[in-house]
Image (cartoon, rainbow over the protein chains, first blue to last red):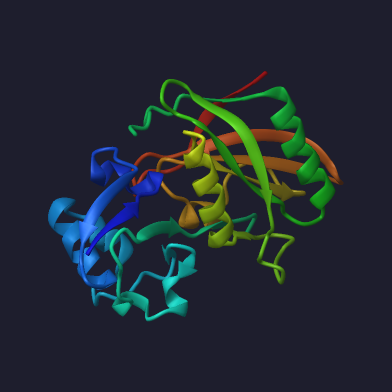
Amino acid sequence: MAVKVRIPTPLRKLTNGADEVKADGANIKDVLNDLEKNFPGLKERICEPDGALRRFVNLYLNDEDIRFKDNLATTLKENDELSIIPAIAGGVF
Amino acid sequence: MFLNFNKNCLYIPRQVYDEMLAHAEQSYPHECCGVLVGSALKDRRVFSAHTVTNVNVERAKDRYDIDPKEILMIDRQARAEGLDILGFYHSHPDHPDRPSEFDRAMGQPGYSYVIISVKSGKTASVKCWAFDDVNDPFKEEKLKIG
């Protein structure tokens, strides 16, 4: 399946500035592996060394957080849109 | 779309800036937060500031946390208008406008972070901060209002 992947600003240095790229895969894990082939270093910003999704990274498949679906095993349809959303937080302490 | 990674200056229209300060003062003694949308194709220019909910309810006095679904929706709208998320703003109630260690720990490269210091309910000072690479410290980014 070819899907669109929305790249947030913090990761665009790894995609040569592109804010959206295409990737192939039957599920999200496959798509992340495909992204890594074309944009080395991208996967480690999204996944822990054991392959699990990093705590401070959110992946939305269309409008849904993949943690509320089948996480990285969530299957994909042609033209789905996967958005990478880094956690945005902070504060005084 | 290619972004301007040279972060020398962030331009914010006066009306948008005033809305951000009003949001910070209304939220006092809690932290407020918002999303800055604009264009980075030439200069880094903010066109609008979207107020969002601080979902860190338990520690709203000294922490903020933005619902990623809100960021997704704002990003989608921005993209439809040919714009982009340039950064975020938040307030530091009764604390300086410098980023805290936690701000840096949670910070993301490439975004502008505007911090509004609010003392006793009134804006005391405002500064903008950014860093380019994951291991860099925050550096001040000039703010131009108007």
